[in-house]
Length: 213
Image (cartoon, rainbow, N blue to C red; front, side, top):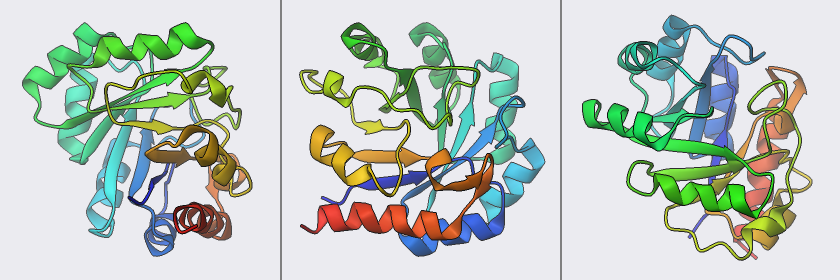
């Protein structure tokens, strides 16, 4: 089965078209004001409408209040909402009970215990995204974690890998983890928040080269 590819932090039609042309399966729109990849809800909605049908659109939120989360989802109408903060399982369960939408939960991985914590979300998340630990920002920092921490974990949900993935290291990451989905943001940028279409193409090609070996 082909590895799914998410290009996150997109903010222009050109970068979305580049992701689609390169063969990405998902794109991420970040609604978090502290991020250099932040897009306002109206802009995110316009990008979502214009996105090619081959792409699933993921709206990324960070510790959003329930009212904001509900409004954001209603305005943007994403295929998936990704919660990338310290949201509890109970909080996400409440969201899931009111909105019929696929939910992803991101985790910053510091140690084996933090990987195990993902099991708390087995009845509320549709996919777990293992990422590098939060720094000044919860994601998109270009740093990676110790992939070997995933080796002994018995995954109870579909899952993906994020954190410092680039065209140069994604094949190694897949060899080590056998991730079902890979997610990159800063790894395909020329500057924070500025996507590089050649790097997007190279990243997707590297994943396909791995899958086709």
